[in-house]
Length: 482
Image (cartoon, helix red, strand yellow):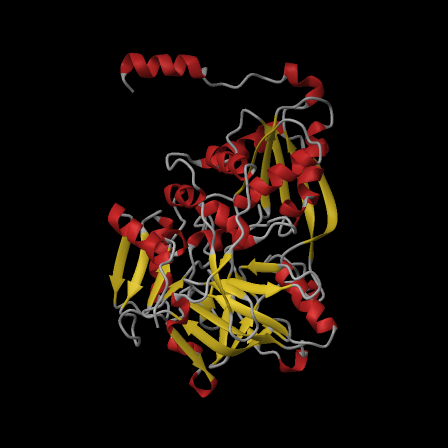
């Protein structure tokens, strides 16, 4: 087969080669897929170390590789987002927020063929364990081929294509569980098929250009299309090919893609899924009869395929260095009319801002802080997986936990500054959900709103902060070369 010349921006291998040339890649030979790859990823992630490329994995041929620790540093995250690699913290998040406002979608371009079809496997030859899917965490219940996955579905009513990142656990040679939780766009499309008594066609990529992964795990608006946003992000159209069985658009340069269907769910026929180390830093419960099961009908992969590994790890060892969902929340709060929001941050996050969201504001009127907290708790980007919302003044560096704790400890009067909102939509990954409250019909969690701003009505009388001014500190640094 002759492979057409492909745009370099579409290729995961080109990204890896760039990291190799810049000295930001560590290559490891001989690690075991069972725990060792996961442990090394965890350790180097904690150190904010280089990206990792594993080869010669125990029990697998040379060339079958795993790529991990991809976006752990601000520099690598900024690189993928098209931003200055010197940015960090709220400045990096704000730069991204401003950049995405200039979004000009670039539709994908369909090509006739691509490297993804270098190998095609169907029928009795199917074996998902032919790929070195790791056991990422010490107590995981199985091998997760999909952590940096791109789950591709098409809405049967609108025809809109969605790409989502959902964890995928190997369940046999030709079966894999796909944890599309209720409310997620992929799950909504699947439910529409099932409501008609039809199976839902699915294609899943397990190694694709990083911009596709980046947008697939973002909480995009329903009218935004992942391929179009990824194209804008990489400044060129994403090249796709039609999947042979169901005509789904799959990345032409994807490393591994599986295609098949999720039949209407039969709780008596769904296997055990999990446990799995999830983004809050705990093992999510094992479930039976809940997680959709994909029946794989075909596998396509490149020669010497690469699995994109993006396992959730215990915070602050987050798989993306900034909480991108906080940027979405920031925009949604401004759209709701909340004035003078100066920053939004999350300390424990996945695709959303997470259960510990902090918002800084320049207070303008009595009740401004409370209004801000309520908006943050109810906006879509702050709702799923949320729990605590803390609002602070704009002099607090909200990317530093120590500063946030200081504000809560010294500016919040618990008598007036705490509120509780009950039964808000949340993620089943929250380990604090009581066993009796866990249900395949959905999950809720209460919200705690904390006003840690100087009390507006007497803020002029609030004690001054015991720290030298920025101007005097700068003068001393210059004078004494410190």
